[in-house]
Image (cartoon, rainbow over all chains, first blue to last red; front, side, top):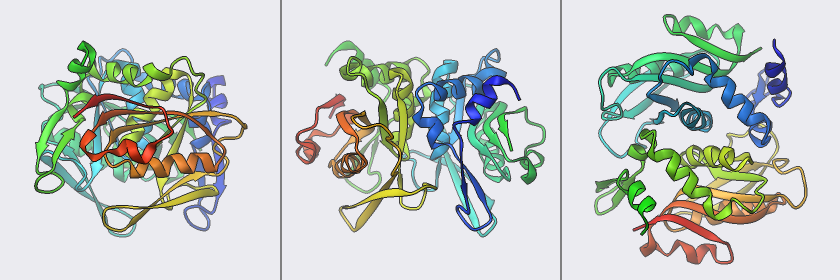
Length: 176
Length: 176
């Protein structure tokens, strides 16, 4: 773990038993609140992809939006919001995926990537089981995007989320 | 309307009859997707407040996060996420407010503003009736923040949202 990673990690707070008993939640709000550490985190999220001419950054609501839009600005890319069902106003493409209990649906505008061969960097704060990100990647590919890679702030390695995302270039800033 | 405002406005798309018949929705996704126009919008959102030593930018999920985090970075401020009920992991302060039909609750971490006399800029994409933003301001004041002002990308003037936000310094980039 390098110095920058260690610095970012000091701004992540452990919350035991949330959202349910036995889960240790990694709370990123102290990182967001720190005007010095947050830009370091954004810069670190871009590092593996800054020479790849990223056209768009895509992220899933809601926490993903916080990192996704700042990473898009840092890379000089456009931002594509991926939302829960029924939130986007124009014609959408959708993907439904399995959760631990039940299912969820993500949507993106069908015309979100107007040019062929556009490269897209996927961004999120957390790689847990990888199910949401796998669905989000599928959605971006459905509308014609080429996924250049996936950048996560935090990876929970025990949950083996990378297995659901095989074939993609994955970078994570912090691992637990 | 100056040149910059006109430029930003060309990236906002009108969607008729959404979310219901008779409503003309102003869709910001083409603005987000444009790598040149989005940074102009972020800069314009900061302009009225860049000399005010803003400590924190606060925004309500989900669309508010897209603008809030980028404005926080541009101002060298920290970012405070305001979320729907049950989403934040640590101890929260809450405020419940009336919607057209029913009620909604917003929450923020009780310890989100550790220092007294911190200044907070509120950011959102849309000023409609002003109900959500009035609740968000109340919440930030409850945890000790001093609201320096409110910066909106779009104002729907017919809905008179400013009346619900009297006493605050409000800046809007685009009016309809």
